[in-house]
Image (tube, rainbow, N blue to C red):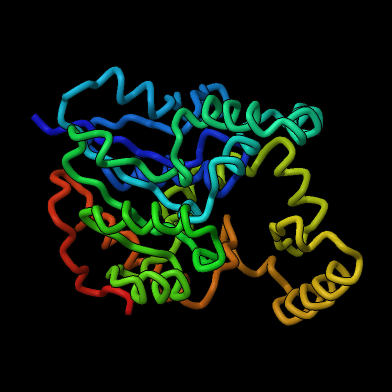
Length: 301
């Protein structure tokens, strides 16, 4: 009997990119018995998602049963326990919680451990040493661009977890170079989210014919470009510079209406070149057996 496969990632919180990883992985792994796990339990089925279980609860339930685990992607190599705990909070509770914990370090540490379910410095990396029943541990399209700037304790923990992985693919060259300097080999593989249009294009098109999406498409008849920015882009000078650059892009690509694309993905040139490789590598590395990762015939370098 095929072992259960845990899809582990940050799709237990309110971030669209991370929420996409679970359905992408599930679509690329037909026939596997899947368990969706994050740091916290979240039932997203009413919103088209999955019933997400807390990883520590999954481990307690499975006990010594052999199981495989796939880290589904995201910038998880540099996400600290504190950051993860705060991101798991409902938005309306963030301000009051941070204010209360600001001058209470002991309570803060206890609260963080309770929120993420472990004492790990990088909780979105499964601890293989603490879970002997894990047979194969794989990382696909993960990121850690700022790994060199993190605390020594977090960096040491992350590198130790990655050295114990059966297969490791990172989503950009900066992370790959940092890992290579630490003696860890990895494959360069685009973020799995680049496959959303290919895997779910028809479904997206159906949803786009009604409701708020249809209203948006009608309001912007020549097409639109959706851009996600972090809080570091929030000052007026940066926003003005970004707006000018986006205006240049929009002018250069008019009109969008001539294209029948139901989903426009604005990705890096590497991601665009390697979208088909992403699907190939996922299938070869993960499908059915989770044996040691074999290089894809069209692997990115």
